Length: 231
Image (cartoon, rainbow, N blue to C red):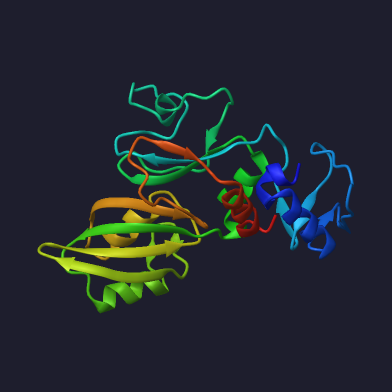
């Protein structure tokens, strides 16, 4: 079962058990031990391993003009218009209709809660295409925090990627998720965004996934999300 969960070959799993790296319900696992995936909690190096066979994890590259709801009263396309799978899944958090990029889909309620709750501070990375020349003072303000109508934003990791005629490309990593936060941060500094792409949610990166397509996460990516959420 542990090999199927993506922990490696059967021999590799046995080696990890012998080394004391795998625990079951907080106790060191032993060779030949039976596991009930519906009740037992398995961890590798104190990082929980998702075992339930009905749990699924996907990464979707959301295009612009697509809403992250199950249905839309205005008839706009939704994320679910792009999904065909036997399991019922839901988007983890929101991504604005006019924004694009990485959106996780799952049926794991506990993981969803932790990824969206500000207490756990799972980072999200964006590429922001801003109008005008975003100078050093504005970059510092984004990093330290800017005042919005719902209060000061928290510290952010900010990196200047490129300046081009009429605009600036900035990478920004946030650990909070207010409504339209990135756009409002740049607007507060008089640099409204032309385009906003989310490139990563925690350790899961968008990579070269094409807009409107999705892929299933590898077991090690699901485990990395668990670690990011302190599960």
